[in-house]
Picture 1 (cartoon, helix red, strand yellow):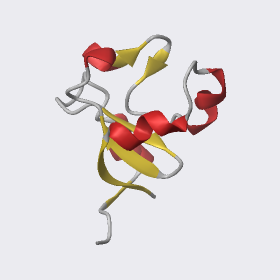
Picture 2 (cartoon, helix red, strand yellow):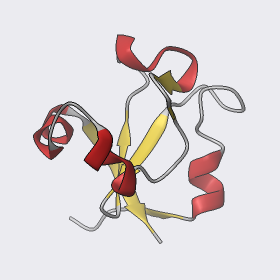
Picture 3 (cartoon, helix red, strand yellow):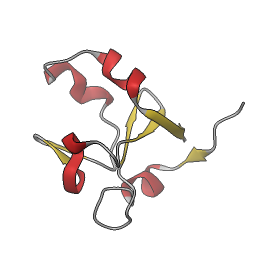
Length: 77
């Protein structure tokens, strides 16, 4: 199944403030973290939703396996 694609501008609107969805991107895949208690109000420690967090993973205390538990909603154009 092909994923729906979204621009960075569309992703930016899913920041937990402008729209009710809270989405993040990692390695070109967009994930829905709306139901995660760790992403309340679109913020997770010093990270903000609505962004591509690929480059920020190096500073995280976890590895990319954390994304396997999240709902995929699309791909980043």
